Image (cartoon, rainbow, N blue to C red; front, side):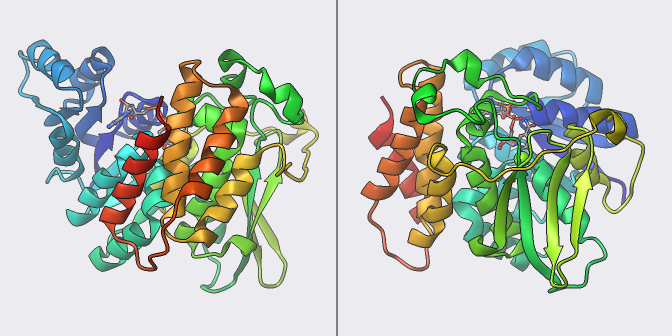
Length: 379
Ligand code: NAD
Ligand code: MG
């Protein structure tokens, strides 16, 4: 089957790199979407000639419609544009590169339309893991991880018999503030927090890396993707981001996936699986790197990581609460309304305030918890 993709969030860090991979391998792009940034979206549309382009912001959609007036490309505004792209008939794979829980309903729409999914949007699984995984099973579609750690685990698992997995070892760079004390973290600036040591990414995930919320979200993401319990997931600080993650098998053999820090490797694998095609990513030269370092995470200073590991144990809705509180807090930090350490405080308060003991949660429960948490903490 020829690959034909729809890229949700095409103007972001993962979206742009997905289009690099598509360009290199001549993968057909049938739909593109973005929130605003229509100049870039127009360039992408002119290059890849999709049939439809979705723009969440209605005014931006109107402007893009005029700009693309000389083409046959259909521009659809609002949430409807995202859903149309997620379900577009000609696409067989949907790349979800939207940031935040805004990506969850589009994922469910794509599953509903029986599209395979290349998932970068980890918030989909954090907030809605139980529902998303059960819908995927019912629809019989494939879910390919794009997050580098989860792609690494997926790559390591190739050829391993089912049930041979004992443990997942998620590596973490430690973000911009590794080794800092709580006191030192109190006065860090937005500019400092946005300086990731190894990866160039969107702002939200870069802040999540600095608080280590990102690794917490990834623990939950891994638990859904690989059906492993929290106790069987280790987080290991590895500053160089060369080993993207590891698995330990029942016989205690450990398998790791290594590479330069370039998201186009996991994106490409998600799109061309099981093929291994040439990549624009640089070759790895271990003799040049010479040393790899490992350490335990500091769960006390980087409280978000600990909070994310506790949230699912409190009940199915709590990861959605932690995620919503974090999304609101990160935006407030970026807007310089709160300090860096307030992010963890807000996530902690949201989790301790939430009161919900229903066992089998529904999509409505998740949407409700997300909305209530945002209303409560947004300033
Ligand atoms: P980004 O901010 O660079 O891009 C986000 C994209 O989503 C943009 O195209 C934007 O227009 C669109 N968007 C934003 N809000 C939206 C909304 N409400 N509805 C629809 N579209 C919206 O983000 P990113 O760094 O590319 O990250 C995207 C996702 O991939 C995140 O979930 C992130 O955690 C995950 N991820 C990113 C990286 C990375 O290297 N950037 C690595 C691993 C995982
Ligand atoms: Mg990651």
